[in-house]
Length: 489
Figure (cartoon, rainbow, N blue to C red):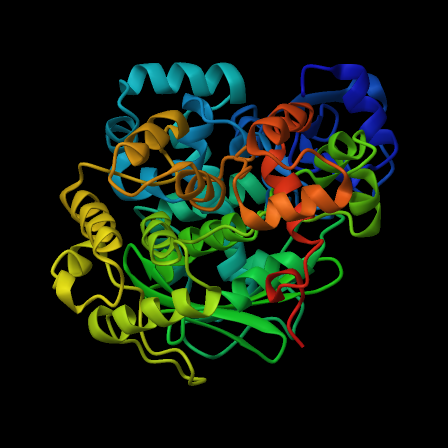
């Protein structure tokens, strides 16, 4: 989008927050870069240049605006609606892969050479993987500086910097302030004293309807791993350096996030996974405008716009839970999962009580005696085959997965039909166009609305909804009175 100069200029002059994260405005006279909705007086058009990422602005020598804080804007929706190399690389960078494994590790996960990845990222984003990861480290550093009283040396390593000197140089270059100056500018009541606990705000593009999003997560919550308490969804997180517990509460203009981490190096990964689970980088205006073009869907969209797709923080976990939920009620699926969690999940300590374990790893579940599973024999085979392939690495489900390849691998497994594959594609892999024409709730909703109710005919009608059919699923499900569609009281 940053190449459409006239469109970008109009967005900046109207301070349109819908475009935050889509592109960044760099001002030639001040050498500052901003988000489109920056509250300051817009610069003259001839003084504006546009970049596709904060990293590209930093590479070009611009520093972040202190008013609009462009580094904290929602991420580009592009990376969650595409499955090409650049999108998969961006999802991995957000998940901290470059910090943990370097660019060679990123390349190995994607199956391309480092040279190819750098060339494609530079062409589309104006910055390579190291610069993109550096921009993310700078954002994490600012968050820790402003919201904790941690010593600067601890913050430097928690944010992923290799040395304190690099940390100091990067903060000065990106924000035109020293780390100490950044902390001095933070509101006095913001720093927290509880070790390992962080409170922050997760931005999103309005509108956001929290009903089906949090309703789905709460209604399907596995006891010990997830819960709904005091207006917030809480769950345990398995992270690269340890474990964490997150509480997410919907607010009118943000998601309030409280993170308890065993290792602060996991902060950027935890934030990225929570944003992905809540689909916070979506562009609801683009989605709703397309779905509203169908006269039978339009009333559903107008009634409650901004529905998101409830996703997951762990793709392998969701695949296992999808199998446990085959042809049983939501309550029965929770019971099956809770038994596995109690028997095979790693214990955690929750200072607030209620959460007791992490969801078991595929390696732990691969050791389960099939005869101990209270399910039909054919589903036992499906379960053991899935966890066996996940544990051995023959099947990998992650943010870097190629959606078409993952679908093909899942369909080849015994007991995996179109419904199971598509629900995994929608909620675990993040495919915004996944569709469930055989789902009973979808067929019932289609019949009530006057849409075709047979899978083939409904699929043909839904072609006009592409590439947002996963969001159409949310609107169709919402016609039912199932608890997944309502924000818990």
